[in-house]
Length: 295
Image 1 (cartoon, rainbow, N blue to C red):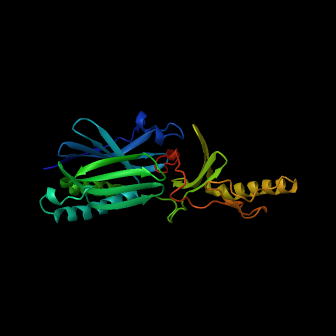
Image 2: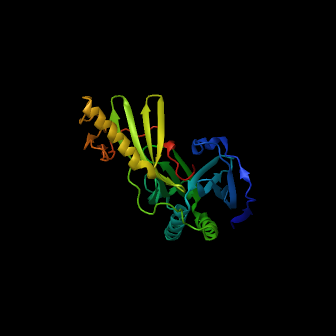
Image 3: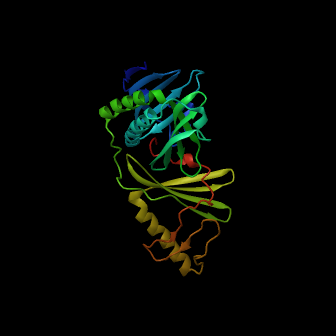
C-alpha cells in the first residue's frame, strides 16, 4: 500500500537552495510554494511541489532515497500533463509484462522508452529492469550537451504517481501561457576562437533571444526581448552599411565552424543567417544560461 499526503503551502516566500543557483542567475528571487504532495513508494519518498516565482508556475519533482540522496527534475505544467499521460501508457505496458524474466532482459535493460521536448529541455522516459526490479527512469537535460538530472520511480508506483500529478493539474491547470507555436531551433557560429550561440526561449513575459559568446574559460551573454528584435536588426544593419561606405566592408565568407554568410547589408534587412547546428558542431558548454521555466 502506497501512502500519500497533501500539504498546502502558505504562499510565503521560500529561499532558493544553494544547489539550484543555475536557475537563479538573473538575480536572487523568492519562490512561493502553492501545494505539495508527498508519496512514499517502497523505500523512496517523492515530493511534487507546485511553485511560483515572478516568472510563473512550475512543478518540482524531488526523489529522496533510503540513504537520503536527493534528485530532482522540473516540469512546466503542460509537460507535467504530457508526463501524466505517458504514465498511464507505461503502467498499462508494465501490467502486460508478467513476472520478471532475467533470461529475457535487453542488454541495456530498457523495456519501453519515450521522449518529451519542451523549449530547450528534453525528457527521456525509460522503463527499465535490473536485478532490483522494474522502474521508470525520468531524465531531464538541457539541449546541446547540458547536464542531466534524473529520478527513478518504482514501476509499482507509477499509477500512484500519475494520480498525484492529476490532482495537482486539476487544481492549477496545464496552460503555460505565452507563445503557442514551436520556437525556432537554436543556432551556432564560430568566428576565429569564439563561439556564438543564438537561442530562442520564452517565459511569462514573452519570447526572447539569448546570444552567448563562449571562449575557453570565458562566456558572456545578452538577452534581447522579441519586441526589440527589429530595432536590434536595424541598428546592426545600419552599422554594416556605414562600414561599407567607409571602405571597411563586411566579409561575406564564413570564419569556419558553424559560421554564416552575409545575405544583405541594407538597412532593415537580415544581415547574417547561421545554419542550424549539426551533430558535429560544438555543444554549448554553458547550457544553463537558458532556463525559461524558472527565470
